[in-house]
Length: 389
Image 1 (cartoon, rainbow, N blue to C red):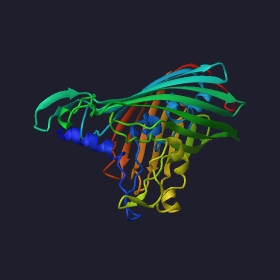
Image 2: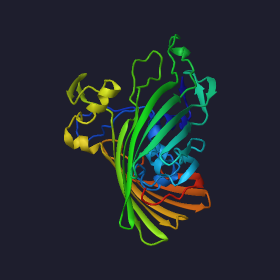
Image 3: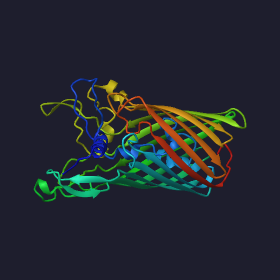
Image 4: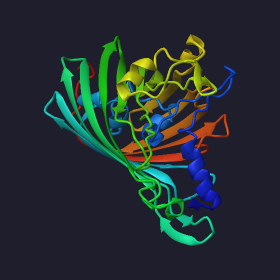
C-alpha cells in the first residue's frame, strides 16, 4: 500500500533523503551519512535559526534545552517557558510543521532543571491499495520529550545531562495485507537518547564571552518494521562553539559567534560487487559507530573534514528590548548539501519576547526553504545576576 498524492510523495521523499546513502565510486559525488529521525536535530526556535542555527555557546534563553542545557545554570530568570512553530516544506504544503515547547526552572543559585517537547505533524495522508482502493486516512507524526539537569561549578563553568524519549509513527501502524500478511507492517519506531553539555562564560574588560561543547542524541538504533532487521543510527552529533559579546555602551551590544558540528555516525563505505572497496563497515553498534565516525571516510581526511558543518551568526541587541540577527550555515555538497543564510528579529516587552526568523537557501533541496519561524517566550522572576558569575 502506498500513499498516492503528490503531497505524500514529497513528504516521504524528504524524510527518506536522510536515510539513504548510496556508495559512490567518484569521491566528488554525493555521499551523505544515513540517520533516522533527523527531525530531532532541526533548530526549533527563531532566535538560533536567525543566527545560522548557532546556539551551543550563545547567551542563555528559554530554548537552550535543544542546544546546550548547561546554559540554564546561568539564566537571568528564575523561570522560563517558550513555544516555537517551524513550517516544513512550506512552499508545497500547509499542514506540516514542527511545534516545540520548552521550560526551565532555577533551583537556588547553582542548579536548574529543564524540559522540552517536540512534535512533528505530517498532516493527513490517504492510504491506497495497490489496486487504487481507498484504505484509510492516517495522521503520521514524530515526537520527543526530554528532561535535563544543569549545575554550575564555580563562577564561570556549568555542565548538564539530558535524557530523551523519541517516537516516530509514519503510517499509523497499518498492516500491509497485500504482502502475505503476518507481521509485515511498518510499526512506530521508539528510541532513547541522552545529551552531555558543558558551558563556560566570563568577562573581558567591558565585554563578555563564552564557549560550549555538547554531544547530543547518543542512544539506541531504531527500526521501522517488526520483521526488518535493518536498524538506523540516531543523529548523534558533537557541537563546539564560541561567542563574544561587544558591549558598545549601556544600550547597544553585538554578539558574534562560530559553531562547528559533526555527526558521530559512521560514513557509508564504497562497495564493489557487495564487498567494501574503500572505507569501513558501517553496520556496527551505536557506540562503535561513534568512535569509527572520526576516521572512516572512504576517501580519507579530505572527506572526513567535509563532514564538519559550520554555522556563523551575529545578533544586535538594543537595551535587551530589540534584536536583529543574521547568520550563515554551511554543509558540504558531498554530505547534507545544506547551505543557507538566515535573518531574524525580536522584540521584548516586560516578560514577553517574540522572535521571528527567515531562511533563504542556496540549494533547492532544503525542506526549510523560505521558512518563517516564530517563537514566543516568557521570562518570569528575573534574578538580575551580575555579569561575571
